[in-house]
Image 1 (cartoon, rainbow, N blue to C red):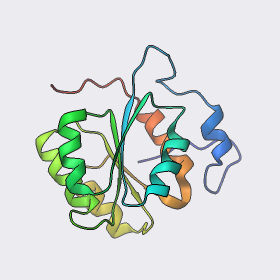
Image 2: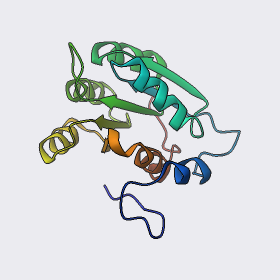
Image 3: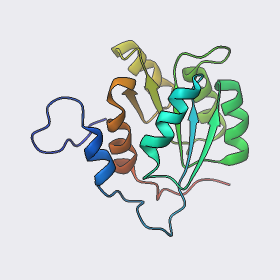
Image 4: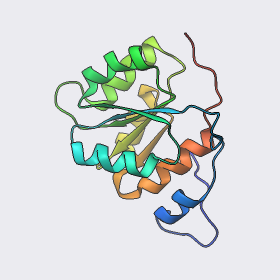
Length: 153
């Protein structure tokens, strides 16, 4: 998936770009729910902070099994899924959620960014894969994809 970079930016997209640029969902009438799945509370807190301009509501999960249950109940617009977690990992949780909810929009977030991880994420049905070293790209990806796609009941 291609991410549009700000002019003159060749490395990771600066966080300042993420926090100051509007996205498709910036209207106060839009209600955007994001589910964050990561086994580290500090990473979940950081993601909430980074994604706050995009979301009106957050759900947090510690692992893939909890994410499966929460997704069915919460039906988030976006799910940000870590790869490496105890129990059910992010790739398997993505596969399971997509099997039940084909319209689920899941982005894999990984510390271990590599072609095999990206391929596994795509095969599981994730819309993208973002390195934890480039969190600003996550916001750009969510904006680029928009949140106006209808979800099934």
